[in-house]
Image (cartoon, rainbow, N blue to C red):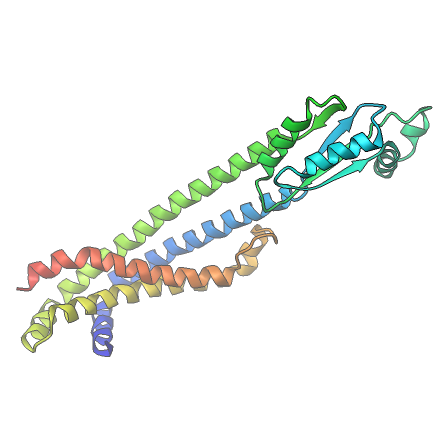
Amino acid sequence: MVRALREASVALWRTGTVGALSAIAVGASLLLVGLFVLMVDAAQGLGAAVKDRVEVDIYLKDGTSRSDARKIADDVAAIPGVAEAAYVDKAAASKEFREMFGNDLLDALSTNPLPASVRVRFDPEGDVTTAARQVVSEVQDHRRVESVDGGESWLGGLDQALDIATGLATFLGVVLCVACAFAVSNTSKLMVLAQREAIEVMRLVGATAAFVRATFLLGGALQGTIGGLIAATVLMMSDQVTGNWFVSDASLSHGSVAIVLVGLGLALGVIGSWASLNRVLQAITP
Protein backbone atom coordinates (compact mmCIF):
# COMPACT_ATOMS: atom_id res chain seq x y z
CA MET A 1 0.00 0.00 0.00
CA VAL A 2 2.89 2.37 0.81
CA ARG A 3 4.49 1.63 -2.57
CA ALA A 4 1.17 2.15 -4.35
CA LEU A 5 0.71 5.48 -2.58
CA ARG A 6 4.23 6.56 -3.57
CA GLU A 7 3.58 5.64 -7.21
CA ALA A 8 0.23 7.46 -7.09
CA SER A 9 1.92 10.60 -5.75
CA VAL A 10 4.51 10.48 -8.52
CA ALA A 11 1.83 9.99 -11.17
CA LEU A 12 -0.21 12.91 -9.83
CA TRP A 13 2.89 15.11 -9.71
CA ARG A 14 3.68 14.34 -13.35
CA THR A 15 0.29 15.69 -14.47
CA GLY A 16 1.72 19.11 -13.61
CA THR A 17 -0.46 22.17 -14.15
CA VAL A 18 -3.43 20.11 -15.31
CA GLY A 19 -3.50 18.15 -12.06
CA ALA A 20 -3.13 21.32 -9.99
CA LEU A 21 -5.93 23.07 -11.85
CA SER A 22 -8.12 19.98 -11.49
CA ALA A 23 -7.52 19.89 -7.72
CA ILE A 24 -8.36 23.60 -7.51
CA ALA A 25 -11.56 23.00 -9.52
CA VAL A 26 -12.52 20.19 -7.16
CA GLY A 27 -11.81 22.46 -4.18
CA ALA A 28 -13.90 25.30 -5.61
CA SER A 29 -16.81 22.97 -6.31
CA LEU A 30 -16.64 21.43 -2.84
CA LEU A 31 -16.44 24.90 -1.29
CA LEU A 32 -19.69 25.83 -3.03
CA VAL A 33 -21.24 22.58 -1.79
CA GLY A 34 -20.20 23.46 1.75
CA LEU A 35 -21.63 26.97 1.48
CA PHE A 36 -24.92 25.58 0.14
CA VAL A 37 -25.09 23.15 3.06
CA LEU A 38 -24.50 25.95 5.57
CA MET A 39 -27.07 28.19 3.90
CA VAL A 40 -29.76 25.51 3.87
CA ASP A 41 -29.00 24.58 7.47
CA ALA A 42 -29.26 28.26 8.43
CA ALA A 43 -32.59 28.57 6.61
CA GLN A 44 -33.90 25.48 8.40
CA GLY A 45 -32.70 26.85 11.73
CA LEU A 46 -34.35 30.20 11.05
CA GLY A 47 -37.57 28.45 10.07
CA ALA A 48 -37.50 26.42 13.29
CA ALA A 49 -36.89 29.58 15.33
CA VAL A 50 -39.85 31.28 13.67
CA LYS A 51 -42.08 28.27 14.23
CA ASP A 52 -41.05 28.19 17.87
CA ARG A 53 -42.81 31.56 18.23
CA VAL A 54 -45.95 30.58 16.33
CA GLU A 55 -49.18 31.00 18.28
CA VAL A 56 -52.83 30.43 17.41
CA ASP A 57 -55.35 32.60 19.27
CA ILE A 58 -58.85 31.18 19.65
CA TYR A 59 -61.14 34.10 20.51
CA LEU A 60 -64.16 33.14 22.58
CA LYS A 61 -67.65 34.62 22.51
CA ASP A 62 -68.76 36.90 25.32
CA GLY A 63 -70.44 34.98 28.10
CA THR A 64 -68.28 31.88 27.68
CA SER A 65 -67.75 30.43 31.14
CA ARG A 66 -64.32 29.65 32.51
CA SER A 67 -65.14 25.93 32.61
CA ASP A 68 -66.20 25.93 28.94
CA ALA A 69 -63.02 27.80 28.00
CA ARG A 70 -60.85 25.34 29.89
CA LYS A 71 -62.68 22.45 28.24
CA ILE A 72 -61.80 23.92 24.83
CA ALA A 73 -58.18 24.41 25.97
CA ASP A 74 -57.96 20.79 27.17
CA ASP A 75 -59.38 19.49 23.87
CA VAL A 76 -56.90 21.58 21.88
CA ALA A 77 -53.98 20.50 24.08
CA ALA A 78 -54.71 16.88 23.16
CA ILE A 79 -54.10 17.56 19.45
CA PRO A 80 -50.74 16.10 18.27
CA GLY A 81 -48.09 18.78 17.92
CA VAL A 82 -49.63 21.17 20.45
CA ALA A 83 -47.25 22.01 23.30
CA GLU A 84 -49.56 24.25 25.33
CA ALA A 85 -53.11 25.60 25.24
CA ALA A 86 -53.60 28.34 27.88
CA TYR A 87 -56.79 30.17 28.79
CA VAL A 88 -56.44 33.98 28.71
CA ASP A 89 -59.38 35.74 30.37
CA LYS A 90 -60.55 39.28 29.62
CA ALA A 91 -58.55 40.79 32.47
CA ALA A 92 -55.31 39.14 31.31
CA ALA A 93 -56.00 40.24 27.74
CA SER A 94 -56.52 43.81 28.94
CA LYS A 95 -53.24 43.73 30.89
CA GLU A 96 -51.31 42.48 27.86
CA PHE A 97 -52.88 45.17 25.66
CA ARG A 98 -51.92 47.91 28.11
CA GLU A 99 -48.33 46.66 28.29
CA MET A 100 -48.07 46.72 24.51
CA PHE A 101 -50.00 49.86 23.58
CA GLY A 102 -50.38 51.85 26.79
CA ASN A 103 -53.44 52.77 28.84
CA ASP A 104 -54.96 55.54 26.75
CA LEU A 105 -57.03 53.44 24.37
CA LEU A 106 -58.69 51.23 26.98
CA ASP A 107 -59.13 54.07 29.51
CA ALA A 108 -61.22 55.90 26.94
CA LEU A 109 -63.74 53.05 26.95
CA SER A 110 -66.29 52.33 29.65
CA THR A 111 -65.98 48.55 29.28
CA ASN A 112 -63.26 46.08 28.35
CA PRO A 113 -63.84 45.18 24.66
CA LEU A 114 -61.15 42.50 24.51
CA PRO A 115 -62.42 38.93 24.30
CA ALA A 116 -61.22 35.99 26.35
CA SER A 117 -59.18 33.53 24.34
CA VAL A 118 -57.24 30.28 24.28
CA ARG A 119 -53.62 30.77 23.25
CA VAL A 120 -52.05 27.76 21.57
CA ARG A 121 -48.32 27.12 21.26
CA PHE A 122 -46.71 24.29 19.31
CA ASP A 123 -43.82 21.88 19.54
CA PRO A 124 -41.18 23.30 17.13
CA GLU A 125 -39.79 19.79 16.58
CA GLY A 126 -43.09 18.66 15.04
CA ASP A 127 -45.05 19.71 11.96
CA VAL A 128 -46.22 23.11 13.16
CA THR A 129 -48.14 23.93 9.99
CA THR A 130 -50.18 20.72 10.10
CA ALA A 131 -50.85 21.11 13.83
CA ALA A 132 -51.99 24.72 13.38
CA ARG A 133 -54.37 23.73 10.59
CA GLN A 134 -55.78 20.91 12.68
CA VAL A 135 -56.38 23.28 15.60
CA VAL A 136 -58.22 25.72 13.34
CA SER A 137 -60.26 22.90 11.82
CA GLU A 138 -61.22 21.53 15.24
CA VAL A 139 -62.44 24.77 16.83
CA GLN A 140 -63.61 27.11 14.08
CA ASP A 141 -67.18 25.76 14.15
CA HIS A 142 -67.40 25.48 17.93
CA ARG A 143 -70.43 27.29 19.33
CA ARG A 144 -68.29 29.12 21.91
CA VAL A 145 -65.65 30.31 19.41
CA GLU A 146 -65.96 33.75 17.85
CA SER A 147 -62.96 33.56 15.53
CA VAL A 148 -59.53 31.96 15.14
CA ASP A 149 -56.30 33.73 14.26
CA GLY A 150 -54.31 30.81 12.87
CA GLY A 151 -51.78 32.31 10.46
CA GLU A 152 -51.69 29.01 8.58
CA SER A 153 -51.37 30.77 5.23
CA TRP A 154 -47.96 32.31 5.99
CA LEU A 155 -46.85 29.09 7.70
CA GLY A 156 -47.61 27.21 4.48
CA GLY A 157 -45.63 29.81 2.54
CA LEU A 158 -42.69 29.40 4.91
CA ASP A 159 -42.72 25.62 4.49
CA GLN A 160 -42.91 25.98 0.72
CA ALA A 161 -39.99 28.43 0.64
CA LEU A 162 -37.85 26.10 2.79
CA ASP A 163 -38.71 23.11 0.58
CA ILE A 164 -37.78 25.04 -2.57
CA ALA A 165 -34.49 26.21 -1.03
CA THR A 166 -33.63 22.68 0.11
CA GLY A 167 -34.50 21.14 -3.26
CA LEU A 168 -32.53 23.75 -5.21
CA ALA A 169 -29.49 23.38 -2.96
CA THR A 170 -29.66 19.58 -3.25
CA PHE A 171 -29.83 19.77 -7.05
CA LEU A 172 -26.90 22.20 -7.27
CA GLY A 173 -24.93 20.09 -4.79
CA VAL A 174 -25.42 16.96 -6.91
CA VAL A 175 -24.38 18.85 -10.07
CA LEU A 176 -21.23 20.14 -8.35
CA CYS A 177 -20.36 16.66 -7.05
CA VAL A 178 -20.70 15.25 -10.57
CA ALA A 179 -18.43 18.04 -11.81
CA CYS A 180 -15.85 17.12 -9.16
CA ALA A 181 -15.92 13.46 -10.17
CA PHE A 182 -15.60 14.44 -13.84
CA ALA A 183 -12.56 16.63 -13.11
CA VAL A 184 -10.86 13.81 -11.20
CA SER A 185 -11.77 11.35 -13.95
CA ASN A 186 -10.06 13.43 -16.62
CA THR A 187 -6.96 13.88 -14.49
CA SER A 188 -6.86 10.14 -13.80
CA LYS A 189 -6.80 9.48 -17.52
CA LEU A 190 -3.84 11.83 -17.85
CA MET A 191 -2.11 10.09 -14.96
CA VAL A 192 -2.49 6.71 -16.64
CA LEU A 193 -1.28 7.99 -20.00
CA ALA A 194 1.66 9.83 -18.39
CA GLN A 195 2.63 6.62 -16.57
CA ARG A 196 2.15 4.34 -19.55
CA GLU A 197 5.78 3.21 -19.67
CA ALA A 198 5.91 2.87 -15.88
CA ILE A 199 2.82 0.63 -16.02
CA GLU A 200 4.49 -1.62 -18.58
CA VAL A 201 7.59 -1.86 -16.36
CA MET A 202 5.46 -2.68 -13.30
CA ARG A 203 3.72 -5.44 -15.23
CA LEU A 204 7.03 -6.86 -16.42
CA VAL A 205 8.43 -7.04 -12.87
CA GLY A 206 5.33 -8.86 -11.64
CA ALA A 207 2.89 -6.17 -10.55
CA THR A 208 -0.67 -7.42 -10.64
CA ALA A 209 -3.53 -5.65 -12.38
CA ALA A 210 -5.04 -5.01 -8.95
CA PHE A 211 -1.87 -3.22 -7.82
CA VAL A 212 -1.84 -1.05 -10.94
CA ARG A 213 -5.49 -0.13 -10.45
CA ALA A 214 -4.96 0.53 -6.75
CA THR A 215 -2.12 2.91 -7.60
CA PHE A 216 -4.30 5.12 -9.74
CA LEU A 217 -7.32 4.83 -7.48
CA LEU A 218 -5.10 6.14 -4.71
CA GLY A 219 -4.00 8.91 -7.05
CA GLY A 220 -7.62 9.91 -7.58
CA ALA A 221 -8.28 9.71 -3.85
CA LEU A 222 -5.22 11.87 -3.23
CA GLN A 223 -6.36 14.46 -5.73
CA GLY A 224 -9.88 14.53 -4.30
CA THR A 225 -8.50 14.84 -0.78
CA ILE A 226 -6.32 17.77 -1.82
CA GLY A 227 -9.39 19.44 -3.32
CA GLY A 228 -11.32 18.76 -0.12
CA LEU A 229 -8.49 20.24 1.97
CA ILE A 230 -8.47 23.35 -0.22
CA ALA A 231 -12.23 23.76 0.25
CA ALA A 232 -12.03 23.08 3.99
CA THR A 233 -9.17 25.56 4.46
CA VAL A 234 -10.92 28.35 2.57
CA LEU A 235 -14.18 27.65 4.42
CA MET A 236 -12.48 27.84 7.81
CA MET A 237 -10.55 30.99 6.84
CA SER A 238 -13.80 32.64 5.75
CA ASP A 239 -15.56 31.76 9.00
CA GLN A 240 -15.44 35.36 10.22
CA VAL A 241 -17.11 36.57 7.01
CA THR A 242 -19.59 33.82 6.21
CA GLY A 243 -20.44 33.33 9.89
CA ASN A 244 -22.34 36.62 9.73
CA TRP A 245 -24.55 35.23 6.97
CA PHE A 246 -25.84 32.33 9.06
CA VAL A 247 -28.13 32.55 12.07
CA SER A 248 -27.18 31.27 15.48
CA ASP A 249 -29.97 28.66 15.28
CA ALA A 250 -28.02 26.70 12.64
CA SER A 251 -27.06 23.23 13.82
CA LEU A 252 -23.90 22.78 11.72
CA SER A 253 -20.56 24.43 12.39
CA HIS A 254 -17.96 25.41 9.79
CA GLY A 255 -15.59 22.84 11.31
CA SER A 256 -17.98 19.91 10.92
CA VAL A 257 -18.79 20.89 7.33
CA ALA A 258 -15.06 21.23 6.57
CA ILE A 259 -14.41 17.67 7.78
CA VAL A 260 -17.25 16.37 5.62
CA LEU A 261 -15.84 18.19 2.59
CA VAL A 262 -12.49 16.43 2.97
CA GLY A 263 -14.22 13.05 3.18
CA LEU A 264 -16.47 13.91 0.24
CA GLY A 265 -13.46 14.95 -1.83
CA LEU A 266 -11.76 11.61 -1.09
CA ALA A 267 -14.88 9.65 -2.05
CA LEU A 268 -15.44 11.62 -5.26
CA GLY A 269 -11.77 11.17 -6.15
CA VAL A 270 -12.09 7.37 -5.88
CA ILE A 271 -15.37 7.37 -7.84
CA GLY A 272 -13.97 9.59 -10.58
CA SER A 273 -10.84 7.47 -10.94
CA TRP A 274 -12.81 4.23 -11.01
CA ALA A 275 -15.08 5.60 -13.74
CA SER A 276 -12.14 6.31 -16.05
CA LEU A 277 -9.58 3.63 -15.24
CA ASN A 278 -11.13 0.46 -16.63
CA ARG A 279 -11.34 1.60 -20.23
CA VAL A 280 -7.95 3.37 -20.26
CA LEU A 281 -6.02 0.57 -18.56
CA GLN A 282 -7.58 -2.05 -20.83
CA ALA A 283 -6.45 -0.02 -23.82
CA ILE A 284 -2.79 0.20 -22.76
CA THR A 285 -2.26 -3.07 -20.89
CA PRO A 286 -2.66 -6.66 -22.10
